[in-house]
Amino acid sequence: MATTTSTAAHTSLASVTLEVADVEAARLFYSAFGVDTYIRLRASEAHSTGFRGFTLALTVSGPATVDGFLSAAVDAGATVLKPAAKSLWGYGGVVQAPDGTIWKIATSEKKDTGPATREIDEVVLLLGVEGVKATKQFYVSRGLTVAKSFGGKYVEFAPGASSAVKLALYKRRALAKDLGVPADGTGSHRIVLGSTADAFTDLDGFAWEAAA
Image 1 (cartoon, rainbow, N blue to C red):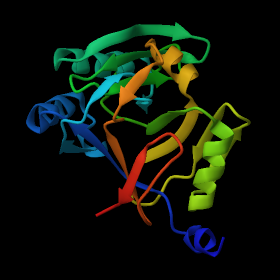
Image 2 (tube, rainbow, N blue to C red; image 1 turned 180 degrees about the vertical axis):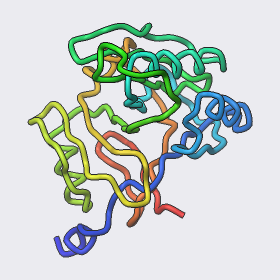
Image 3 (cartoon, helix red, strand yellow; image 1 turned 45 degrees about the vertical axis):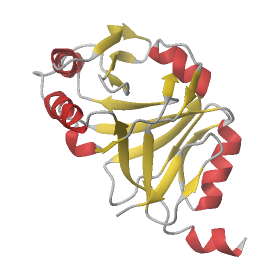
Image 4 (cartoon, rainbow, N blue to C red; image 1 turned 60 degrees about the vertical axis):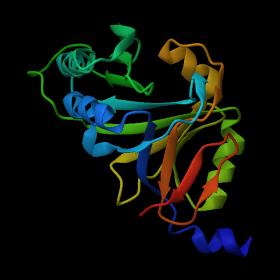
């Protein structure tokens, strides 16, 4: 236990790297989408089918801004998985990038209180895991700090000083349902998380590496 205790004050998410088949095409897409500063890209031909087990979620100020980001993504080549619509929690939609990464754009507001902007309030990397409680405990043992926890349904970790992306856990099947895709998937997650400490792999196969 001494090792995990020593890393407790230092481990957090430092970066998010998407593994894509065509780095230049992905770079052009994410620049047009407006999220290129939040991610890194790496060439990979790793086998992957179906749901990769994660999504990147943008929180923005209002419905018009949601629509703006969705339109930018579609114009750049994304596929709509769930058209923008009002829900119990606000307003949002889901798209899939040409490289296969799923993005959700949402706001807690149901009415616009101002003009559309290109500003992002928050980016959250949601990992779909089989056991939220078990994975939460795994990450706590690796030194991550829990910011919010709702039993075995949802966990959010405190963000690191070096990353603009928050890390959260959600049940895999619930996440897939929320995104409008089947939960089944095989092969690589096609994502690598940068750690402020050492490299490791979590209970669901998500790989972390020491951030450069």
